Image (cartoon, rainbow, N blue to C red; front, side, top):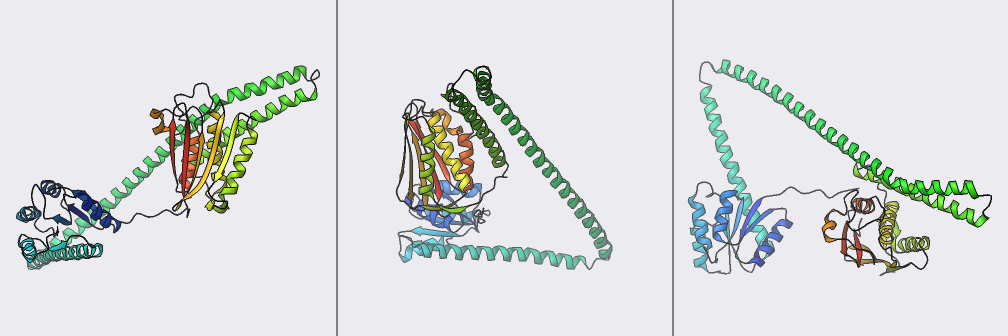
Length: 427
């Protein structure tokens, strides 16, 4: 699927203002244009920030309590390191005297408050262009001095010999650099390959160990039922035999689900999971899954409900991955609600997002466990004897990520949990 590419930062701008609202307004405006923005609230902080990392441009408020903008600018212009940084003054003072003073202490431009976005951006861009041209001129002057020096050297009798020697040394150096770069690239690729191999090996070991542990109970169930059928089949009526056959069938189905989850997780971890989106009516799709899931559970123990804000909520999604998200959330809701209760699914639109929530009245999740809930093989510390591999939420999160969505957990231990999934409407 297509991901948004991050645009390169255009320039580093320091905004100095003692009013937080102004800082937020200016930083938001500039960042939307791709600028890197740093914010400080006073003159002393501004001088320290500039000394630490000189910016490409400074937006400087005049009226500040600790040190006004005039003094800050004057001190900047006294330093060889910072004197060439363009300073645009910001002030509600709009008199001619104030502007004259601003330019007298070294300011390059002046913006009156309240700000006009277009004016601020235009003045910033203008000053940055001037600064860029100044740097280019300086570099050209340096280059010109070098050319003059080389011309002078051309008058030396041994110039040709020296040039030949320098050319050979440079060529040899370039060859060595190229060979070194290739070696570094190979070393880097080898490290990546070894790390990936180790990650694959560790994950496989974890999956094998977990499945081996989790298969014991279902295998014991199958063995028990087959032994009973073998010993007493001729004595039992058909209904009792069917009960054990269904028990075996149900257990095998559980084992298949565990194995499918492990295989899906392996693909997701190493970005091998296919993403094939199609447009579907999410309302009818979720309603059908919730109904089917409710039929499978113990009658009377749980109350499954599905509510949607609209009957037709269409979205471009991978059907199997979205099914896996909802089924895993419903499975967790029933598994960790041993006493039963209501399990609800809600689907609705919110701005440019489609959101669905699964809420239960189960054991909840301790607060100290929530930061690691989406990690593989992670389970709550209060699950006790409830069986599980700790893959449900991890797999659901991987599927949500493939849709460029978000997933969050709200829970209160002993009262229940709500899982919220938010997908972009344009996914």
